[in-house]
View 1 (cartoon, rainbow, N blue to C red):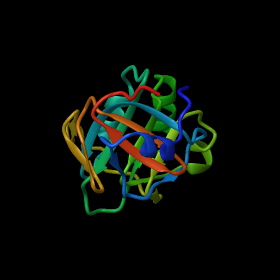
View 2: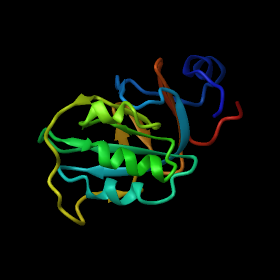
View 3: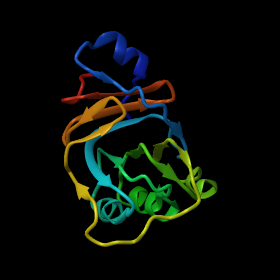
View 4: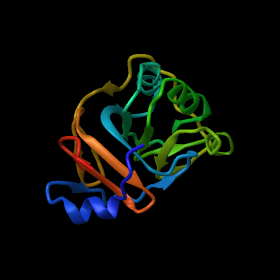
Length: 161
């Protein structure tokens, strides 16, 4: 794992976007970084489930939950699949569930909070690897994200740390 802190990245880099969306850590790993892959979901997480089945070595999945309906984008099964496929972590501006299991999975997972209801299971709903926005930050696939318990930043390329 790369040794960094988000405050140090902010102090040493001008060309970064600092996230103003306040997220909480729910996975067993609190600090991670990686190349961004994106998912844009309204009320179905089928595209998230599809993405985490791919090799995630060195990658972070950023999920933009655009729906108005309260539901969880990530549960224990998606978190476990992401871990098994080597994803560094998952970040969402939505909610997660099954935290009593997720907190023991060796993966980074940040979200707004928890909500017990699952999403609709609608195949083909949602978009993957498209530009998204998380709070004030514009995110494109291939950008890099760095996150720890201090906050998170996004860069257009991997930083030399």
